[in-house]
Length: 74
Image (cartoon, rainbow, N blue to C red; front, side, top):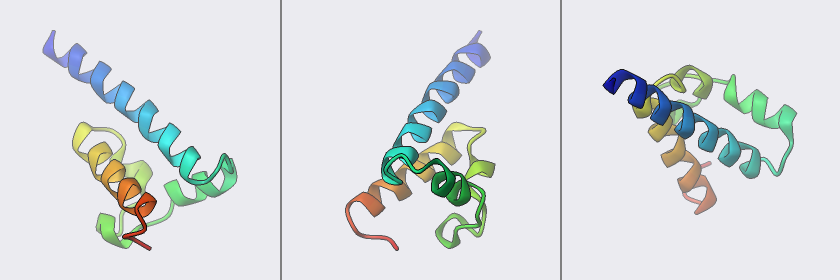
């Protein structure tokens, strides 16, 4: 049962991350999808999409988005 709950948590978190990414790119789906599939230095040269399968990866992406929103990352 714990696995089902974890899957639900990850699915909800993934949806939230997608919303945050689209908001970051002001609804520009093409730009958001390009960013999702591009290696990002601060993510260990991994594409964000590759990190979206578990809570830890999603939290890394959310942390990066928050830093960008605050103007701390480029």
